[in-house]
Length: 127
Image (cartoon, rainbow, N blue to C red; front, side):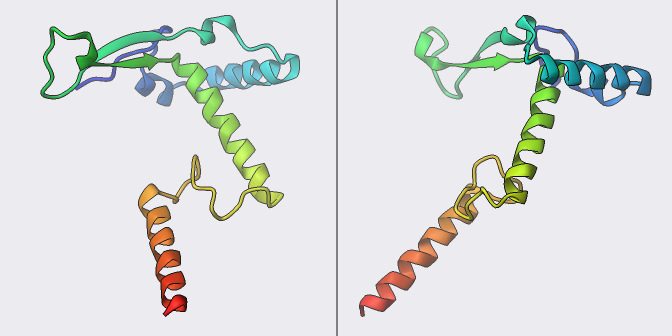
């Protein structure tokens, strides 16, 4: 199954094969966005798709799940910014060990295991 494109119509795989000259232009663009604090209006739009939920009646509107597709370059910009923010927050010690959202190598299953361990320890202390 191929991935559906966002409003800019650029497939993610094409961005992975971008020539160095175009990457240099993206660096200039991203730097200017940060310098001027102007977020392109075109990136504030998405392409909305409705996906039928498995086993649901396609005649019912509630049987569909909405998906918003964003511009590929916008997603790249946001991913770079998130990486920078998380790196800086980690460097400054601003992230608690309990913070799992948007952090690599921290899954819901790992957080649940930590909770079970803490509850088990507390129950053992009560005995």
